[in-house]
Image 1 (cartoon, rainbow, N blue to C red):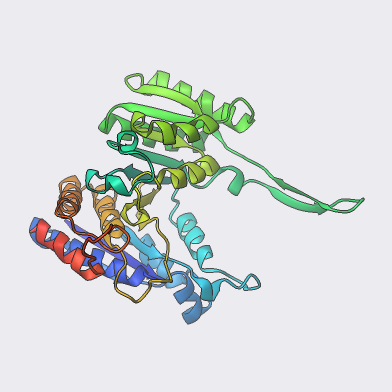
Image 2: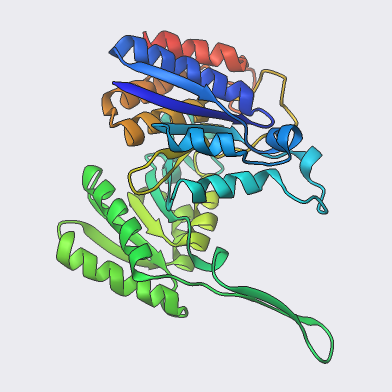
Length: 358
């Protein structure tokens, strides 16, 4: 297969971890007989410093013409001035819009080898394997908002949750198809006892289940109950789909289940164009340049890119097995190490993954 990938290292530890994921992709190309072309471009704070724009036009064009986009991280304290005209995070929001990415996929998997790093008891979290689908371009984040002064003093702020049928249908179908490929269970999370937008979600999703996905084990859970269930019985869930605000909160809560942000990748997908793949842990400026960042989330994000942008499931599974095999040997970066375990550098951990792939 011929594929073109755009690498957006970004800020902080981004360049360190993206360079290691590239090494893994290059080995995959050699091992499986593919031809991968890589282009590197700027996004975030480094792009502001160089061009004044967190997402330069050249970056947008490269991304639109690519097979998939692998992002490191954006942001850091040097760009945190509240009076700044633009911020690194604006580049991330814009690239999602430019690529038409409406679905954020975040797998939450508790590795047996790392189970003791979880804040939950072993018997609660062991076996957790959830795939979240968060709607990414609608809801309260993108609905009408206003701030007005009140006659008697003070202000009134308004943020509106807005959804249309088509927005709900497209992400629900994507989640339902994924559930068919996994364990056949789909959970939709809403707040239909209070919100009209959630009532529309409930009606649209119920109609799709009846007409197109009657084979799925389908359930609906209110968001407040779901927040409790994620802590008390996370292994009860397979694929979870929800709107933007709820998905933002629930996926951050669920990210704590495995015990380390350094293990969790994510994907943002649209309607057939290139997807955006990234680790969820951020730019970690406190450790940038020290060579100790955990590259595994970015390597796993590269595996998601192969699966979702290229249809290369065998290659993606090879990477995921290699990561698990390396963890089984006791290999740990600083964020994963406990007690007297040896701490590996970013490059050393990637070397082990490459060895396992070979």
